Length: 335
Image 1 (cartoon, rainbow, N blue to C red):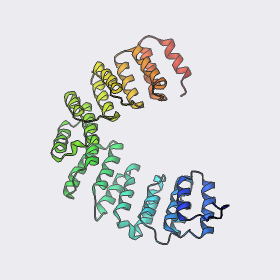
Image 2 (image 1 turned 45 degrees about the horizontal axis):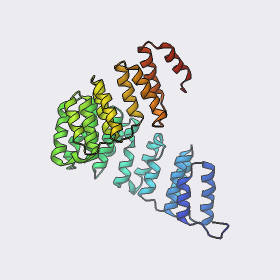
Image 3 (image 1 turned 90 degrees about the vertical axis):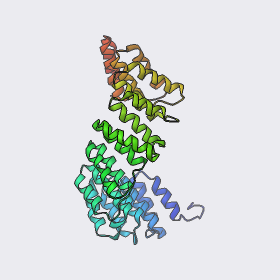
Image 4 (image 1 turned 90 degrees about the horizontal axis):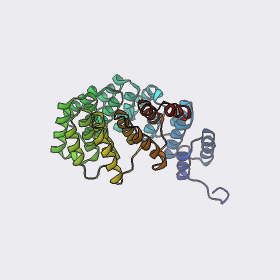
């Protein structure tokens, strides 16, 4: 562009910075931004903030650029908060509080990343300080709590949403079903199932998949199969939930039959699918079938086996008394 006499504009720099993954290159682009006099442009400033948060080991680089934006907008803040520097969130939180953007719901929802750091009290303090909360606020909180294993706290959010007159949507419902599955609370999960039917949320595949997973983990196989049959076009997550539920409850033959149905339905299995099938073969002491399954991962589906797949394969061979083959797998696996 420069050789052709076409000067780069703000859109050019935003695209370049968004694609940049090397700090030195990003710094060169930054210098070009300064020369072009676009450092005050908010879209370019946001792109610079995001680039430094992504590429630099020093949060000060991003903060220096951020302070140079004359009128930072919501995107400026979410670029700063939602990038990779989660351990620096307390510093960012303090900086946000001093500005008018602290009251912006998008910024506040981004600050709920505290929950992902195990700082639940801080996250919940932010939620309670918000003048307005929405479904995203509570869904983000529930999702983070589930990831940390705090399923009971995640279910308490149902009451908070009710008190704020916020309707459960398909995303929050999936989070609550995941929490119920984690706790094994059949009564709560069935109440959520009834609510999904009455509210029409059951038409969303994320909710249906959540029901399959919940019933499977609670040992209610008939209900899991019913929930699965009600899915118009099951995706691989639907199939994985069904296979997992069947296998974990001892229905090895049915789980392997479901895996055959996956292929017949034209759905491409993923790494999780094979992990579940290898586990079923392991529990069923089906050595030859386990070997065939493992080999098909790479040969047919071009899926690279991970350490967990090798662990199951070694266990399958060991239980089948094929110790030399098991030892060979251990010595040749890339982990």
